[in-house]
Length: 384
Image (cartoon, rainbow, N blue to C red; front, side):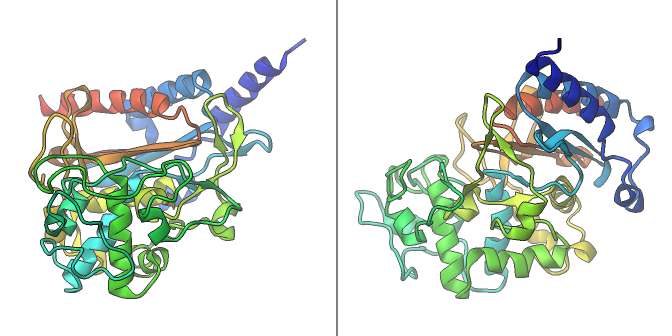
């Protein structure tokens, strides 16, 4: 007699093999390489199968970028175990702190429009909420320092709230009324003197965008960033349309959980697909003006991808992009973790390569890291 665990394992394994998404019509239409020509595809498929099964992660979607273009995409496992709904290129995931890298595009657009400058004191123009008086110099908190985690601001990250719960306002969040953190945003070090990761900083940046544009953050990003770029399945809100195509989130034990929603959208609230995020990575590599559709200038993206002083062994950031060095491979991009979700985007600018990995499980870091390691070995071989 087959027990429940064994039955789940068999069904999961079969689904993982059957529901590869690299040969969908859309994949062919945009010119993906034949997966059979790339041994990395087979290696990553094997690693993905093993890692998802071992770590109670129902599914993973992976896109590999070569020479500035998506080479192939593959999907393994389930968006929902109970209904046997497979992961596809259109499956929507929450991507945690990768939200920051994407929201930085909207904030940098404000600088191009002349609504804000990178080096002006943000407190001076804020109306709805201001940074409290501190022993440190509040006037040194600028958008550049916020986006690069060098502003000296408190609070690393957020836990979010279950869907159906009334969300706090931005002002309430900034004042520390979140149930999980219970901590307001304030200066914990002198701005511009050290690198200190701060999710709260991006919540402050979200407020800046809303005040400068008189629009809600999610609405502005949809209209001015996602729609022009053709990111039709990307949003900072869980709309009913998004939910219909969403994966289900699973905790570390493999149990389904409710999606988390965030007042702090710029920091942690982005929903997207592997294709949309891979296209974002493509644009980060090529900065192609014809494909940017005036969302940002190529020179602005290049500025965002440069490190901002100060940085140290604790961290190093550009404007939205983080500098990473896993397994001695220097990349830019971001990782993201929310309860039930895990994701990573790595970009290697010298070779114009990248990889995007999205998981619908809390243990997703145990899936994307070995997948990353396989990809990183390939990139390091190319550099020899």
